[in-house]
Length: 596
Image (cartoon, rainbow, N blue to C red):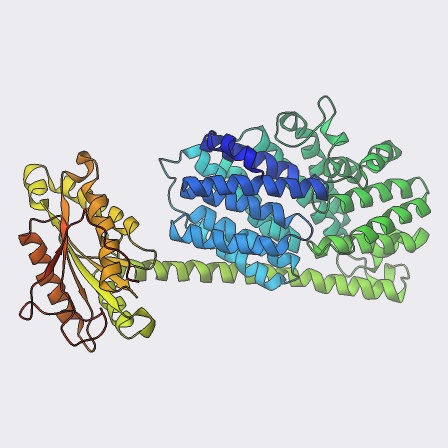
């Protein structure tokens, strides 16, 4: 995005940024390549603005939008992978379960494009496991926004299942997506749901035909046609690009195809021809082409029908995003090439729903071979569903185990690592060369007893939560803050000499002292800072940090006390004990310079 546009973005609300991203995502799938690149550029500008603001949910949603735009744009898939890695890390760091599931679903879509179908199935299993155990709606976010996030994640899972041709599982997922927004959906969400279901039903019907289940396929086509008619009203008010006053079936290929599949006739040919080859959603052109070919074949125009199918086969030659749909196209060509016997031969040759052998009409060896392969592929779909369910349950149980483990290492009040987790991290860092020098700080709250005495323990708990969050946010990304007990915290600063550690902790002291009184009730920090000695045990370094903290208390609090290194010892990572020298007291208003 150009610099001249960025000040305008800064004036826009979060809701506007999110709404604009939704409009762009609705448009990018129906745009030509040049326009898609412009959309990506605009979305990147929106993402940059949200990252500047730092609101975690908004950043995650814009990461999703930017990644999704690249997934549907030729030549941009590699960039999508980087954004999805960032989205996964971001959502895990901020505990955004629904958007983390969404990231896994989009990774599944990426893997389908890379012809890694089994790995894609694993990603969808992970996403669904998260959604199966999704937390209760976030009250601050609002029920409607929460439902929209849930529906979006489920829709992204559905897309991959539909791409893989696992229609039974896809039906379950899209029904859940519909349920999520049933009470709060706007016209755009309703339109999206209906069009997705139409597309799925058409693909499902074609798949059923391939194993000779024509009655079942016809039922899918009729249901799709009724939904194509029902989408008319919400489509007129949706975010999708559209021509005002023109029926949806004249603008959206998948809707026109649904009517033609349900009742192929001459009446659909002109409409389908106008939509054939138009920019549309993935696989829409294949569905339009097959529907048009069937209408032409019904008018004894087999050569025209074959030309239509060959044309789309050529134009879609590099599209790997839905292998099952490409097979439908190839099968339709084979059916037409079989001439007058066409559909009848394919039906009687099938090993599913076939007539008894004595009553079957003769079929070519190639048709028999194709039917046998189709039956084998059909049985494999049951294996896919079983694999999905098994992996989904495995991911769910793994998540439960991880949650139990996390609870055992987490302080329930502040969400910080507890003393057990601290001991493990301290042992690990002490044995890691890259973490040296390792600064260790003991943090105690000045005036906290008065909060409990003059107010309540509940207010005291609130103060502890606020201070813990402020302390964590003021430090470096790889520093570790743990609750030691009561109103004491331990900070581990790997790779930090005392000067750098003092500078980092001074930020924490200032941040807490600057908190609004109604949040902190006036508490401040007294910090004892030492550096881990060679071969020093955890209890020894914590005891020295405790002694230094009391030195800070005696100096009036709201400050840091450190000890200089002993004479004759190299490096700033070794501290002097209380019996060997006096502690240095750091005034939090003074920022020490970084060592040169």
